[in-house]
Picture 1 (cartoon, rainbow, N blue to C red):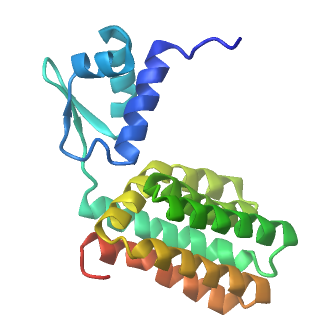
Picture 2 (tube, rainbow, N blue to C red):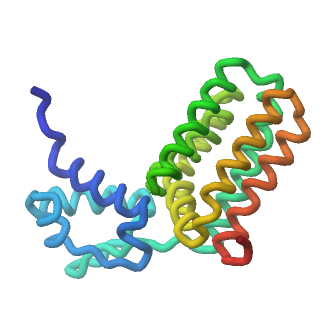
Length: 213
């Protein structure tokens, strides 16, 4: 029988997942006592987990008060969108002509998104959405670029859930836009694929500002 993960790891996983799927929204103050009770551990592993999450930029610790969940700033959104455009436009151009294994994997991820959307599981939709884009980036075969992209994972997931909560109609629209990217890859249309990616990613910044539907 496998042993249970260390207490600090359990707290880390609990808090991080709650921050990413916005059960703990930006501005929420978390106390060691509440987290210890929620996970069923002592306060020592809670402190260890919170320190790790602070290093990752998700929390800000205040001695004797607790940990504040850091909200996603407008500058952070702009930085993520700009970086994604640079990386993903390059990757999707390099993906043409798309190998059969990439097309098959993107089809599977698109089906996953549809299934999670039907269930109303926004966190799972966001995760499958992010995997769709990451698969195209990985296909470029540039390990440094892939690691850079992976560093944005947490920010992408938080933004994805925030957008879908504020604009529920974007769930279906995101899936449709992914289908357009996939169709362009299937037909080998490099310019169309790059334009689809550019439009799709650029909407994130607009949507988070609340100026688009």
